[in-house]
Image 1 (cartoon, rainbow, N blue to C red):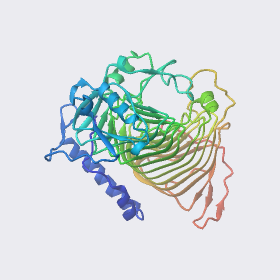
Image 2 (cartoon, one colour):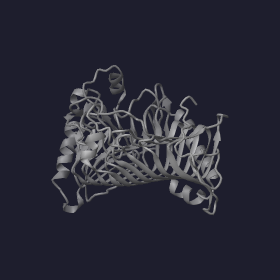
Image 3 (spheres, rainbow, N blue to C red):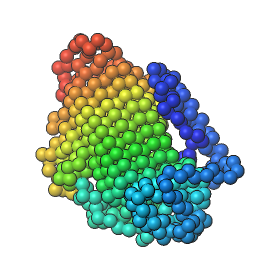
Image 4 (cartoon, rainbow, N blue to C red):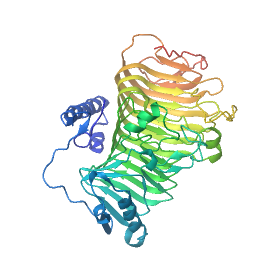
Length: 489
């Protein structure tokens, strides 16, 4: 199934301000917007998921966001979907790089049209602006994608040992970069990559659609990203990253590892007002893999995720891990709708990861038609090699869930700690989830210590202490280490 861009934007800020006091009203309104958009999208589809824009006359002028602005056509670009524009992008970026900080950098405008290109690099103090009906197309011939060294916190390529393919749009050691537009599109044309991956025809790890590394002050806004060969947007070891008002799309099946946004060893990140429907995690917060991530020692921290509608029929709406060996802390996820998904929110780790996941806040989360709502898994045993340290045990603690609601959920909670990796200081408050499966023990726990404040539905596991609404202890659990996990449900 192919998804296309919703008509209009969700304008969550006004929704949240007006309706936060009533989660039911918020849920109904978001549901109407999301699914009303689906029907509108379908009317714009021709053949196998090709979107056709409604023309309203002349294209709107491109705003000037930097003192100096260039058009891609000034450098020989041809937007016919066939001409290769790599050299045009490279010449344009070179011209902007020569400006440096002088006068505030430069802006590269991509006009309406289809602009085929091989991967290219960005430069500092640059704005890449995609006009309405502009579409950057990634070339499908992998021979034109450069090879890069493995990420230092991963040790090897994620899928193969040795070099990895670079990203379609790439940047390293940059400052002050903006990628925005009038909802133009960056299309990785990942179909050939997915097919070759399934057929085991690739010798290197696939590249992301966009990857920014060792950089700061990055803004991605008002564009559509679709059909990435691999992860869609991968900020790596970056500071001060903002992702706002974007749409990320890939087929919800048969598009392997097309995560939406993967902040990796990043700090001071805001992701807000987005719609993401992809073939893997909509968002996955990472910080390195086993001994390589432990040695690299760059945590992901101070991350705010809010006002999102997400879908993942293969993995989860919002994940932390499993590559979290540098640590993940101080994350807030709020005002989130997860619909028609396998899992809603998930933390995953394993023996050998080391690191920590702590100070994680989930607030005002709505599930609709989700198989498993909340997952914490401590046996995600996928490793880069056999040299990981089995004594490197991750710490998972200080996690709160408040305002968790929804319907059509099979298992609302599955928190699977272990004797080696217990889950500590978990809090549930204000939870009411409609169920599709009438069976006991659907609130599943193992090796967890924490509390329930007030009354929640369904009834919590026996591992948790019970407090009343005033915060007074009602019943202390004596069974924190009992196991009540059933993966057959």
